[in-house]
Length: 387
Image (tube, rainbow, N blue to C red; front, side, top):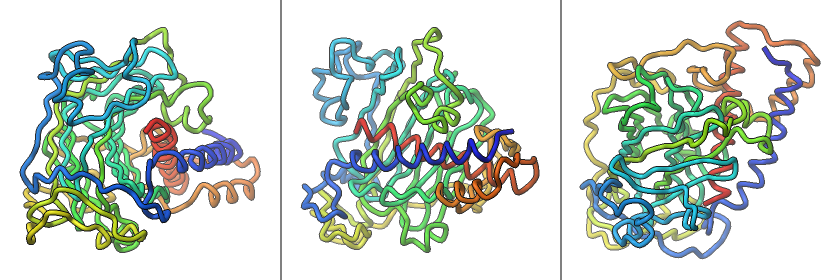
């Protein structure tokens, strides 16, 4: 158990970190009145485009491989002499050997709704985070995240315009060790739902009804970002370190994630063709996006997922997914998070003095809110500082 005072401190630290990150992780935010360049579209309009990392030139040959560079943009810190990114027969190797490494690549093109399927093996190690992030110029976001010390679960999250309301993060138990074998993780994103799938089985379905009836739904073109980073380093806020499972022990390094293949299907905003996406105003709404090159309607693809449960608050049990009971340990919570903000929680905590949390339904819900808040803010705070 932990005191409410320490929780308030963690929230305060994380809130300040998120504010810094919010100023840096979008190169051009159209909702801020900026005139931004059009986003190049994948434009495959319901026909998947695959990228198999194992077919790229080995070692650091990717640095001169046009196939790689046409598809992906490597971010800061991974192009130099001692690059933490290399290629072998298993795919792209994202390696962390010290606390300041954060190998990250992002797609050069965008999808405007679509399906992203990533086959990967997450990096093991306390304090190490592996991520698949879909992010737009105006900071709509959909995430998968793996905590290296929690080998039997995966986290999902989504929010809009860089404002995490601490209500959409969930942790899902899986029946395998996510750090030992390759598995395929899918985000199928439309105006009507976000389906999160593991090896083809849906574990979560979110709907716009959960996001202010769609007003806060991710709805603008996104890039695909793949990366690994250190959540458990000494200069991170205490809450981030706690969420990441503790401080990383670099005596156990290297920490390695493998990305084998990415399959991307652009739904092209429901149009038949697309060459680029243009923000026509600063609203950040779906309707404000012009699909250049279209000549008619095309739809959003078939909903062919055999849903085990259509409730977004429940992770479906399947051959690959297992439920995990909620506890007061924030790293293992499976409950959907509540609606408090860091400020609200901090104010409530200060009114309660040094009273300790008790293990009951209310405290489990509080812990679940904390788990999701730490996860989402940590992802923003580090990933996009390097974007």
